[in-house]
Image (cartoon, rainbow, N blue to C red; front, top):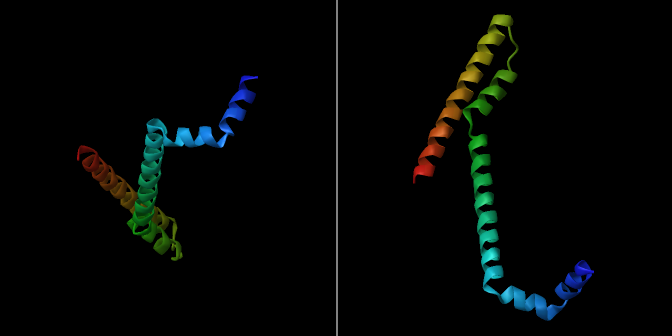
Amino acid sequence: MLARMLFTLLNRLQVVEKLAESRPIRRAAQITAYALTKAQLAGQDASKRVMRSQTLRQVREEAGRVPGDLGEVGNRLRRVRQTFVNEVKEGWKDGSRQIKK
């Protein structure tokens, strides 16, 4: 019964307009728009970082080469791992600096 009353109430244009004009609803809309914009920018920034990533470039490069023996494969994996670890450390430092600001 309560759900039906709420449904009926929220389907009235005048009620919806009054709610839309209220300060709490406007503020909620502003916060939502801000959060979505911030998330979109963060996603774009992350994708740009991935595309210019040394690790990604190195993996593509190493995948194109045919390994001579098992020792060479181990060396390649070690280099890729080290590059990845360095990039994670740099990203961690950058994140820490941004949080401090």
